[in-house]
Image 1 (spheres, rainbow, N blue to C red):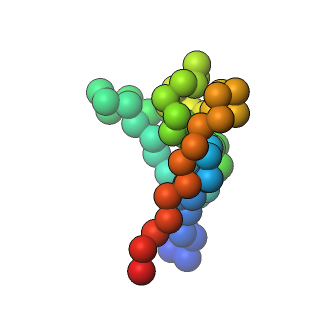
Image 2: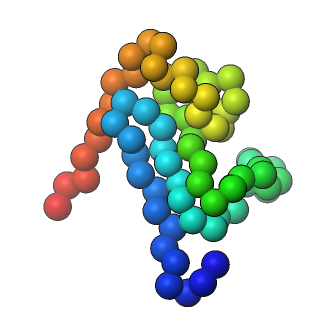
Length: 70
């Protein structure tokens, strides 16, 4: 990763957490997952591909749209 590149993590309304940038994603034992430059993490808890989002949140209308406070 270059010194100027920021990692961006976006909490999508009613959906996943989108991660963009060069990051390493580890499991609880410290083993790395294979990830690309951009990937989505499950927030609804229903994905069959956890920790990654598989779009299942759309099937049961997951409802969460947190906002950052200033």
